[in-house]
Length: 138
Image 1: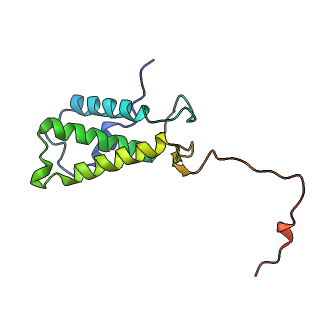
Image 2 (image 1 turned 90 degrees about the horizontal axis):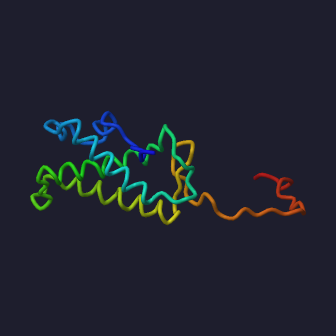
Image 3 (image 1 turned 90 degrees about the vertical axis):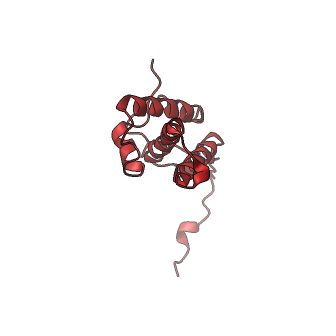
């Protein structure tokens, strides 16, 4: 079974600066998205619904696009020191940070499409009613 690719070239175009992909072939874009998806897959904990199905979490799509764009710009001769490509580094760093939080289960992928902080924590139940529903609202 082929590994999932979490973003399309159409989605990539929507999250990168205009013109950044002007001279980049579709094949190169697709390979970068496949590589970035593979990297993201390494961070998705076992608790995530497997296999993941479309539509993918929009945050996952965005971060995969940012990783793919970093790879594309690095291939093209990215020069962060020149200052003109700082946005690609910022986005790549944000993607790595988000994926690290996902791996640590600080956030999770939600089937509704958004990460949820703290989901999966302990559930507490009590057989004795506490009367909180009877408290007056002020």
